Length: 220
Image (cartoon, rainbow, N blue to C red; front, side, top):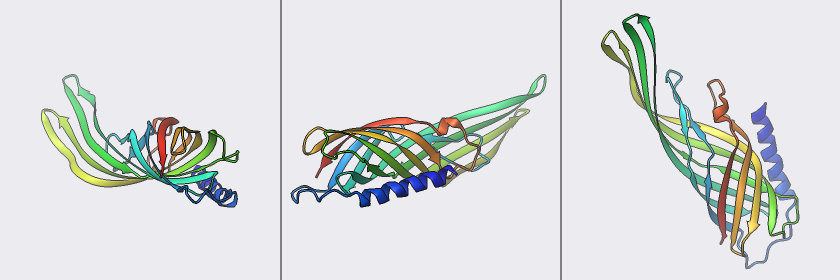
């Protein structure tokens, strides 16, 4: 149900943005902007079900390119890159002097391309402004995974492979925007809703969390 709710929210925000357009900005003002942001949003990189562990990336730095739909709404495309390594193992006693152990290693990396819509119902001429935000973020990942089994002094490779991955994460929250000057604007994002729409494994709260971010935009 949640994915449908977020899709509806995204559609409502977009339609509202088009319906509530303010008078066109001065012809000397560009509708386009570029920006850079820092955030701690976690994006999972999902592998095969047989993998012992799974993890994700945090692309702390994101580059954004955006367009002002109106004085009250913007849409932007971002790009971020992250990588991570995961090591884990578990074992059990078969007898007093014999154990069975499985070890897993993964190297993961991915590119995130969030498309974000921001909309405010308030006076667009305020220096300090509050926006609602909604985002869909495709994640194109790559996993290099290896696992071994050890029993009675013999080690066996369970798998040693590489594979591409694809996930898509939906988020929604609030943005506090501050106009520093005619060209520069600073902002702080608060993510209040987070959902991996391609989560095939049992949900774990660690991957469905709230997060924050800050950034600055330059009006072209």
